[in-house]
Image (cartoon, rainbow, N blue to C red; front, side, top):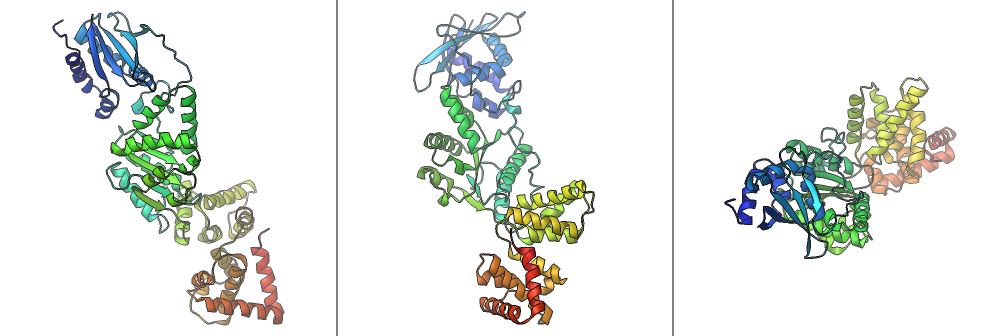
Length: 476
């Protein structure tokens, strides 16, 4: 052999390898390798961990065989020096390059036997038989941007998420911290970013994982003495999505390892997306150094959807499912369920199930019966919108007329009843109630409540109205 320098030999191997793998995989799996020595046709290279060694042998065995045979001949061998956990020492393993009539490379220990447990961390999400570039990123394929209905309640988060998906790690929104109460679309939006980024660049390594699963994997890695493997895997991700990051609160060891993963990804221009039910400033039990990093990029909140957004969500879902439902029923659902998108869709599904099981048409009467029970069973407090809808339905008056400036007696009484029940059954301020009832001030709301009480004492028929409406609104 004309070549004796181990660095030159390995560089020649890298030239062949570089032309046979993607740029990203080359950076992750071959650049960290250090050539150590060449002796007796054995090229020794150093790899960062046993996980790294196993990954090379599992996924690049054919490529390694070709390159070593080219440089060292058929009898050439490749020896790995594996860096041990928390140590500068290494342990050698030899990979013999077989003769041409053999199919696989043999992996034999030289001095220290390999203890290969079946409970290895490796890639926590690996699907047996598939290479890393084909790994399932754990994304929900139905959670796309197309399926995400934009409104005033989520416009900032949605716009920032779309920008991140177009250029992961290349915007100032890193990390992108999405927060809001349950059922408002945090998980949907986070998945949509991952799906869009993966579609634009299939070679991107995208991974979605819940904070709970992240912690479970970390504990398994500690128990199997494979912490380095765990960290190395997560540090190789291009776009990492951690859902419900608030669940790391109080878990000091998990926070510590996530801190180092976060730093590595951020410093190397990788994208991090975090979701939480609280803003960073409101998360208790999280290390300050992590909270400060959560604020590096953009924190975008998701709020409860307004009426227009709720209507758009329902219509989009109905259209997708190919169902025909009247606008009257759709509006009734939108007025009834105001807390979050999950309950809104749940109410629609419940209505469809009732109609199917009882073989009934989906009409306003069925919607009223089902929604009244659904609201009572799912929320503790009815909304102002729902109160207005029930009262307008009771008097058969369009809600737009009730909110208008008309001074017709029956409309004014309808408006006053809405204010009265909003004050009785919600925790909203008088100013907020007035705003919902035609932009009235708090004095008007107080006057309305006083008027309703007076009429209840002097007008038997009006007292009957109050009793009937109260039955429809009272939460059991």
